[in-house]
Amino acid sequence: MEMKEIAWQDFEAVELRAGTIIEVLDFPEARKPAYKVIVDFGPDIGTRKSSARIKDLYAEEELLGRQVIAVVNFPPKQIGPMRSECLITGFYRQDGSVVLAVPEREVVNGSKLG
View 1 (cartoon, rainbow, N blue to C red):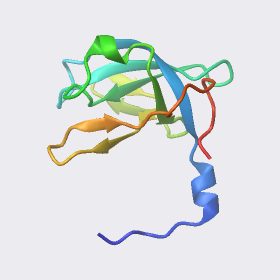
View 2 (cartoon, helix red, strand yellow):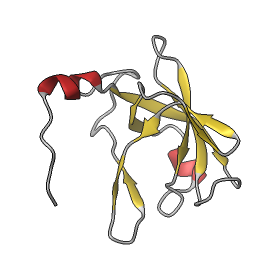
View 3 (cartoon, one colour):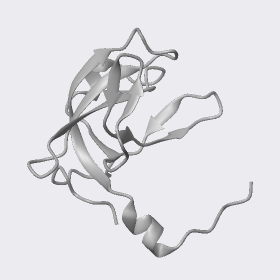
């Protein structure tokens, strides 16, 4: 796989922030199994909704209170009946399931990855 090289300024433009999952709902309208997730990014950013295809490895109850890393400066994206306001990050496994990218230790909600 060939990787495209980017400038440092390109990386600096991406707002990768830590947030805590405060609500998880089933999303039956999604084309692929997914949850509707609400993440708290602290007082400066607030809460954001996301569609997350992580049902293969995560149950709703184990996601509540978990910190995740998400891109918070993409424009909202319409996914079925909901507007996704952030992109929760993760790694694809060979079977197509997604492993969440998470802070190794707890950090303040809204902290920027850098």
